[in-house]
Length: 375
Image (cartoon, rainbow, N blue to C red; front, side):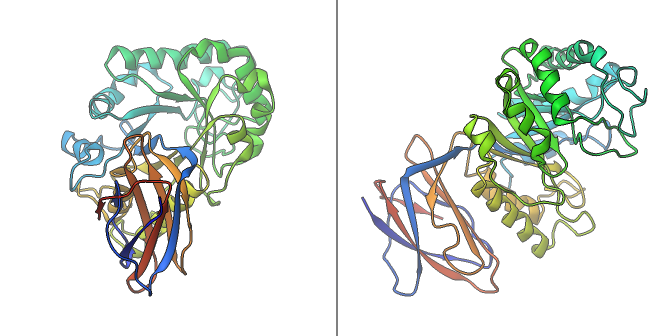
């Protein structure tokens, strides 16, 4: 069935348009968005952010409720990223916030910035270095011990990463890996992770050289559930090799301009544009850097920032399990749009308008029974 809905897309970001069916009339002055509910793309796993416990002050109970709750005035995050400390004596720091996020329905992903120093070529937690092959098994035990610890404390992991930014050698916790090293590690150790979802990559700029060797080797690729990457110095792009291998693609860290206030609308729109582009690139998840920061989704006083409001337009409405469907992605200049559906017949349309004025769109929806329109 084809039906039409006319709506205004206001300056900045139009709140998500929830369509479970249709109402409204077609305007002769509206640009038409064609939406086909029969043509499906990626399934959304969620939107999230990093909890920096151990590096910065932990989120409070109220702030976690604001970030991971899904009511009005909350953001609706569904993924919390946490750090795997190289010192197991400090793992308890991660528990309180992670456990609360899980109680609110969030998935936990855990990332190590470095193996313990004695396992590395430079015998240091910082300045890169490499995991020594002789310690592959010991490192696996370290990661799995963390997973077991979190599970014992009612904060089970959904996914675990092998390494944060393996193509970066800073003077803080870090470790360098090549694509071949990831491949060899997974061929040797992948079976030990069992049903725990493995994330590989998490490179600084979604560099395929870190993950292509894994994906091109069936003995390594079979253990990988998620290809992760960051967006520093790059923009969202499709990754056909990962998609064709049946892997989820997660953007696992980025922030836009830490010197700019999170309540600046111009930079908030940059976040909106990046979120839209990530969805068009077939990413299954988008995970911001620190949840609470001057440039974060929450400002330091725990209030939802404009960047957080932008994130909520996706996170609150495009819930885990929704599937992106075909829609006119750029119906007019400076307007970008994506559409999603779930198994209950609900459709969500999110439009980003970076023009200086309101714009009108006509939604032409096919292969869906439309009867109710909310915005």
